[in-house]
Amino acid sequence: MFYETLEQIITCDNIPQKFEMFYDFYQNLDKFSFNSDKKPKIFNKPSYASFCKIVHPAKVPRRRGFETPEKKAVLLHAIVHIEYSAIDLALDACYRFRNLPKEYYLDWLEVAEDEIRHFKMINTLLEKTGYKYGDFPVHNSLFEASQKTQDLLSRMAIIPRWYEAGGLDANEKIINRLKKIKDPLAEETIKALLVILKEEIPHVKKGDKWFKWECKRQNLEPVETYFKIVDKFFKDWKKKDLNVAARLKAGFSCRELKILNENAEC
Image (cartoon, rainbow, N blue to C red; front, side, top):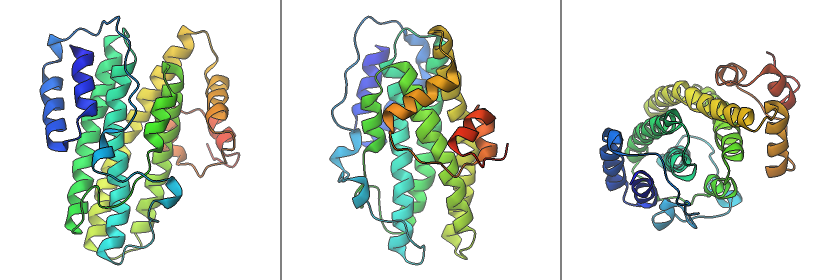
């Protein structure tokens, strides 16, 4: 019932019920077996599709300024959406890849629990603006990436080691921008983002660990394999502004960071 229960949690679109189901499941893990010969389903829509309008990334409201309740809400809504998406991604990492070491499932369920807490932190701030999750259009890039990564190697490369690692870079930029704003909500948001930044580093590190575990199992060189996968998924990817310290803690090598941005100081 481990995978069947995960499927129910992932597809649930009632947020309080989803979280209640998760906590009950997480507290009773000893009842489950991680072995299964059944194939996982490929989900055709994300669980937020029933309460969020999904648009092309270019049509998502731009995060500019923090002067009005709406501008504050646009930024916070974008972060809330990332955190909600990350919950389902962590759960899907458990659901999709079967008969792996128990430590693998414990790692990603721990991540899911963290992401629920992060969602609640930012959602509380969002609701202070008078808006709620679902009030603005969202994109489904992360969900689409999960659909395209149906093997463990590409999933660990693309979700934690690309998207979530990119979140480490973006988080630092948002914090630095908010530090220039004299506003109580900006200060609260900075505090929340600092917690998230600190706790997201181990999330990326878990992705790094299982990516390298799978590389070893397949007798592949990790750095070359990583960029081969990245080049396949993002043909025109551009050099990044990196949070070098966070990425090094998360398991990236200096060699990788230099490929991502030759000016990286590490």
